[in-house]
Amino acid sequence: MRSRIRGLALACTLLYVPAIAQEQSSSLLLRLSEPLNPPQNPPTEKPSPPQSPAPPPAGQAQATLPMPSTPMRLTLQAAETVALKNNPQISVYRLLALASAQLIREEKAAYYPNLYGSLTAVGANQGSRIAAGALNSPHLYEKAAGGLTLSQLITDFGRTGNLVAASALRAKAADMNSVATADQIKLAVDQAFYNALQAFAERAVAEQTTAARQAVSDQVTTLFQNKLRSELDVSFANANLAQAKLLLLDVQNNYQAALSRLSLVLGFPNQQNFELVETDTTLTPPPDSVNELVDEAYSNRPEIMAQDYEYRAAQHFQKAERDLLLPSVEALGVVGKVPFAPTADGVQPFTSWYGAAGVNINIPIFNGFLYPARSKHAALQTRATQEQLRDLKDRIADQVRTSWLNAIAAFNRINVTQQFVDQSNLAFDLSQARYKIGLSSIVELSAAQLQQTQAQIQLAAAKYQYRTAQAVLRFEIAAP
Image (cartoon, rainbow, N blue to C red; front, side):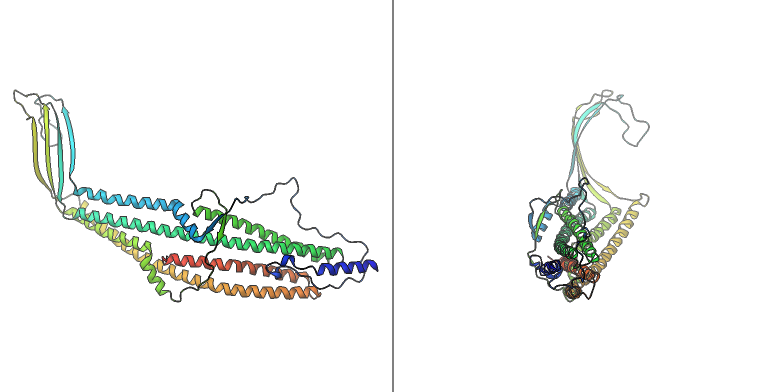
């Protein structure tokens, strides 16, 4: 009789143990606050309870995640600044833009004189002549001379001007590509930042769930030892604990992977440990109209500007290729000195100085239809570039609409997920109450626990998924 009284007293004491340290969500903890019906004929010996999930054997190595270093405090704005400074893709496109600017100087070189010097020394059979080969002056004389040659383009009827204009427009397109790359890097930073915050929130839920289920497992095990619960209850409690530990391992791995991705986007060669700080906690709904967003994207997207510059550059290049069929006028001048020139047959073939100036007009007549083919090729490329611009606008409009719809769905998902959490909490409380008074088994309670955990994880993720959707929408319309 005394043994039975002591068992009932111990059971009542365990059943009134408060929830662990007033956890953030009391529904995560199985609160056994009411006494259960004791068995009629308790045995005198206590059976051995089922074992909780055991740690690895002493001789078996256990994999561990990297030990965190001192965390770096990081806001979203600071992360974007660091990425724009360190990410190598930014440097790549800036260098390409600078390289494109040099193409303008290359084309403008045709406007300036071309001056070069020549030094010539010839040993020949004095007075002999070239009898075979190209059509040129056949006379051969020994000589040593030096001189300068100057050429200056007078006009090519607009070809050089069109080439310069095309290069300038391509340089502007390269600048817009650099801006587009910066926007893409900022979007990647936003996505990695919010993914890391989401993984951190999910890790907190998993840690809280594991702690709560560990307490439940300990309590149910103690009750089983006093014959107040069955072995099945203990097995389900330990299975729920193992499931929570598996969830914790997954979210810990996801969090480390998110930090690794964020470190990569920020331009760090190694994974960094960050303390991520949210400066803006307000959630504003998406805009009501998508048509205005599409118009804003047409006006702001650097990709559209770059493609428009490419189209205009192709138009100028087409005109430059067409101008190959027109004449070109060039001024020429030479001057030099002949310090050594032996006589031939008693006659000096060279004077000590020479100089001349003239104008040369090149008129293309026939070259195997090369210039017409080049002009046609440039015209077709121009039309293709125009179609690429139209296709780009259509795709951007579709991306804006899709991003807008995704943002609306993500925003509405927050409220629906909150309702899911409320209902799962209510279902858990009801299942817990039924379990306490013996109207249901631990199977029903375990299902309610699992549903509650899933709801809380989805709620933790819903906010950051909407933040990510907002970032994508800002990128699609090129909003600041």
